Amino acid sequence: MTSTTAASAGSDPTAHSAPLRTRTVAVFGTIAIVLIGLNLRAGISGAAALFHDLQAVLGYGAFVAAIVPSVPTLCFAVAGAATSWLTRLLGVEKAILLSLVMLAGGLLLRGVPSTGMLVAGTVVGMSGLAVCNVAMPSFIREYFADRTSLMTGLYTMTMTTGATVTSVLIVPMALQLGSPSAGLGSIGILAVAACLGFLPIALHAHRNAPAVKATQVSPWPLLRTRTGLLITLGFTVQALLAYSVLSWFPYMLATEGVSAAEGGLMFGLMQLVSVPAGMVLIAIGARPRMLRPAFYFASVATVLGVAGMLLLPAAMAPLTAVLLGLGLGIFPLIMVMISRSGRNTTETTALSTLAQSVGYLLATLGPFGMGLLHSATGSWTVPLVLLLAVAVGQVFVAHLLTARAKR
Image 1 (cartoon, rainbow, N blue to C red):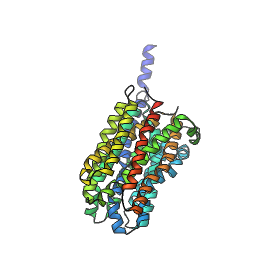
Image 2: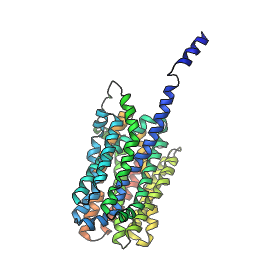
Image 3: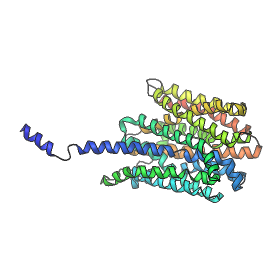
Image 4: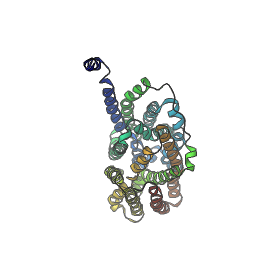
């Protein structure tokens, strides 16, 4: 009997195929996470480094100059709100693939030297990025349930790496191509690579789609829960601070006499510091009773960085960039909390939709308000004072957010 059973198992062609398929999907999933991560901020940081030159070449006024940096967070709010519905309709994998196609198309469209194409391409590309942002925690939860911290750290690390490399190289690239628009459009090639890298995962999901659709979980009632409210509040504050800085830091340096290339280097330094900062903070936060200190460290670093932008001369920009980079490390902490929340992938998607759609909608006030206040006052003082107040508020939000998860 034993030998017969063994022989049957040995002759079963599927005996080792399931683990092999699992390993293959894990490998392709990891590659996809890396390629997607490289794109999550590249289109934003690349545009920020070229805003001054784009305005000079295309000739748009102060209002458009304030609108363009605000488009990403506005798209994140509006398009991100539809992600729960989209993932229920198509599945997480197909929704992500669609979002990457939109991202690539929008970024390539920005290569056309026109204000209209700059705005339209930003809207399309950032709408795709919004869906991808919201769906990624659910993708990680579904494919890497036992390694959420590791994989979240990987994709946030590649996200900041992509932003860093783009910030440093985009100005020389634009000079080489002879146009800031062409330099901006070249970022779309990276998004095309992400589409191709994610295609095997989408095809695998299509072939193995379950016969029964997952039940829908509406994100909005979660706002009445303590978990939903606190995570949304934490995400909102960090997003407002992050995108205010990401949108205007190079421009601020340019208005203080720093060259576009040097401003791009300082912007790249900020992003570069955020790579190890995020990884270290995730490692610290995973230890017993260390989640709250990790949030405190990132929040206080942001306070000091914004204060440096307000008080220090342009010659001290490297110090300010380092402090702000440390503060940006709070993002992966928030994303890990989202990935671990909810009883299943559907609830995680709902919570991610809630936090990111509401958070980015309110965060739009940051880059847009800073641009308008700068245009109205001719100075960065008032915008930075208000931003400093928000940064101080983030310390208190971090205290509330970590009260529920203090270990």
